[in-house]
Image (cartoon, rainbow, N blue to C red; front, side, top):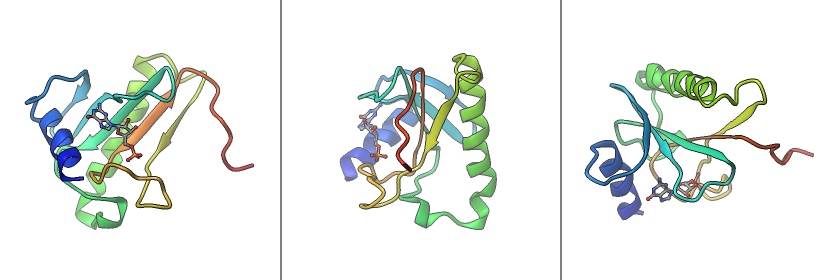
Length: 116
Ligand code: 5GP
């Protein structure tokens, strides 16, 4: 887990080479190493937050920025009209495997409806 936390931190600080698609003062977005759809981008805070359980009111701007950036990237990647999904997994039942808060942006093909 710590290694993976470090991997995300190293991506932010550009200590390891990855395909960063967006970065600002609050968030960084990069391609998922094992994409589940043609567009699969992870959007993460520049500060370490373990899970969605660890967010505080002081993180509201940051969390809003994550959604704003997801929407902007979707437009840039031209998947805004066809549609896309944003997902935050939390802990074991939520299928979180990397314990560094991240939002998935998935698009480029029809997704599976997991609710029905
Ligand atoms: P989770 O299941 O925790 O919501 O998602 C973790 C995601 O991180 C997975 O989609 C996985 O493919 C991705 N991932 C794991 N390690 C790396 C890595 O070293 N680099 C990148 N770019 N993505 C990673």
